Image 1 (spheres, rainbow, N blue to C red):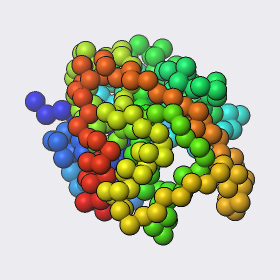
Image 2 (image 1 turned 135 degrees about the vertical axis):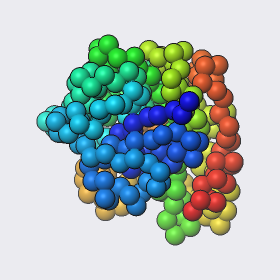
Image 3 (image 1 turned 60 degrees about the vertical axis):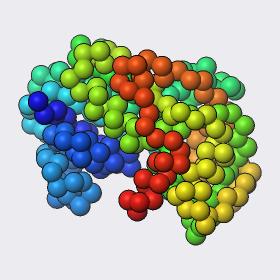
Image 4 (image 1 turned 90 degrees about the horizontal axis):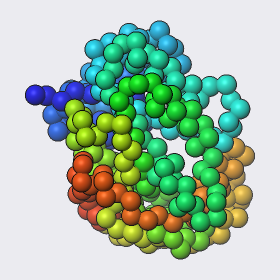
Length: 293
């Protein structure tokens, strides 16, 4: 039987690649998007597009009709908890209300690994967006709809964004291990969770095989993805000299300071047992991305 899934956030940085991988594996994918015409250029031709906006409850009722399994992959890049609307908070709350009314049977969502394991923060720093995201997580858990949360380590997919003119700047001092993951392995976990009762009402850590510092992981990734690139180490104060808008600079410094003190332990044993083990190393995923570029 063909597996089916509806995805909210399919055109996002991680969402578009998970969507592509699921479609390649024969999953019948529906993408809930604000602008179907614009989304055509970003998503595979076989993906069904429906119009919907997480800020518009009426559009969600129409878009989610017939959905059994829903996957939410949204992102917040602000520390302002006082804003009246966030996609990962009020947006997800709207989605949950529509899911209940339309008979959705399973909701999946991603979040950071620190959400479930705050003790990984060696200096007790909480990632600022978690306070925003928590409202949506709580709504899903209270909905009565079976859920699956994927609590993910640092995505290798993010590293090419920091590569400019064959220069990769490591800002900060990183001494603790990270178990880098990637969108291809995440797509495999999502695939294996569809229609899987053993995955329902569960929270899974998503981690890779290798435990390396951010600097070590980025260096290994670039050896394959961009072997001509030069890695430079810069102090955190560099962010203030980059000429970024204030809000963006504040967020970047918070993010990197948080990652700098994050020390992961291996906690993905249940994930690997129920949904499968990672297929990629840092180098093999870098090779896959390079071949797609």
